[in-house]
Figure 1 (tube, helix red, strand yellow):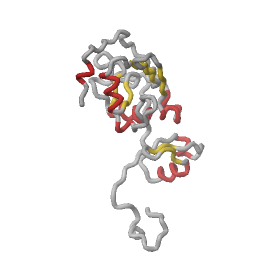
Figure 2 (spheres, helix red, strand yellow; figure 1 turned 180 degrees about the vertical axis):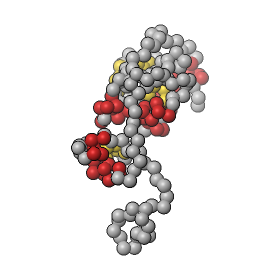
Figure 3 (cartoon, one colour; figure 1 turned 90 degrees about the vertical axis):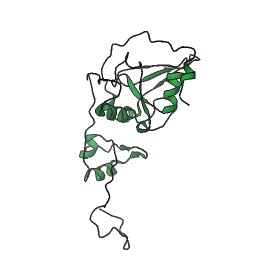
Figure 4 (cartoon, one colour; figure 1 turned 135 degrees about the vertical axis):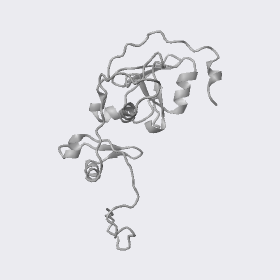
Length: 200
């Protein structure tokens, strides 16, 4: 309902907005219950104060985010809707060091390329299109993924960078390990002409 308080508000006579609006907010159950004042997270905006989270929750449909601990891999290359939702909330952004492109606008990358590596939260994470192409087609870039979503990226120069998922850093329940995978240790090395295959 409009709460602007303006006498000439065109929506003042309406009880509710006429258009359906969908926003996604991540928050802990304790915040919703009033047992905590820990803020929530609104993609595209950032930190959302606990009072605002509770105000939104009064008229919202609440959906818990399931942490797929010990879940079987998804069949095929594309992640299931549940896996995709979990990855986007766990990571929030592209996982390349220093990149803040939102996860929902990023590709889902298999750390160990599919079909050798499964479509599973312990082997997938969001990379924006540019960083996904660099990792896939530019020789010398390698990454490893731990079950809690931590990424260790090694550059062609030998420099090593670590990134932790932003959502899991804010909401520790999302940092639970999603399962140890037995992945092949020897990955196929891209050929010298691999970069020529990169989409332009």
